[in-house]
Length: 207
Image 1 (cartoon, rainbow, N blue to C red):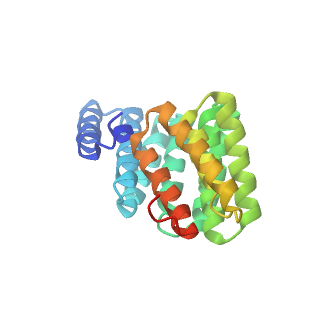
Image 2: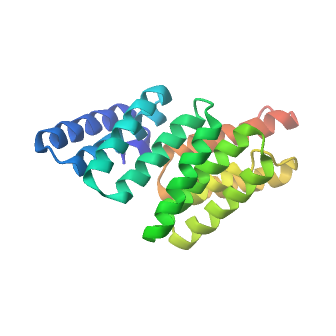
């Protein structure tokens, strides 16, 4: 919730408290869950390199816990940290693996979020068609699961290589509406920035 509202300091404090409790309990599943949350905070705080280490620790703890869902979440966190540090091939591989694990366990929302990671990685590689296919797959899964956060992220990805500015702006407004409905002020800021870029391209600076 703190991440959604953009209060990253509070989110970081909570993730730290979670991890301290988990380590005292000496339960690998709790440690994995706490590390997954800390990795997410680090990513949203612009500390993707830190998140790489944290996500790998989360994977190790999840493996000890023998809970595939926690391991798959750690893979998504690791994949996002990797594509944000330009390790696109590794990110695509890890997010694809996570998507398959989520599909096997019937977690459609998380499967969609994993395909969003694949889309971002393929976009970074310049593999546009593959990226758009992954984004459309993510969007379909997010809509099926009612995951508005996932809907917003997937639609935003579909704008990355869209040459039609009018279509791009329609998509961005759909993404903004999804994030507004989900209560993600932090993601709304990202979409507002992207809309501003489109107005800038058009020369409509006052917009």
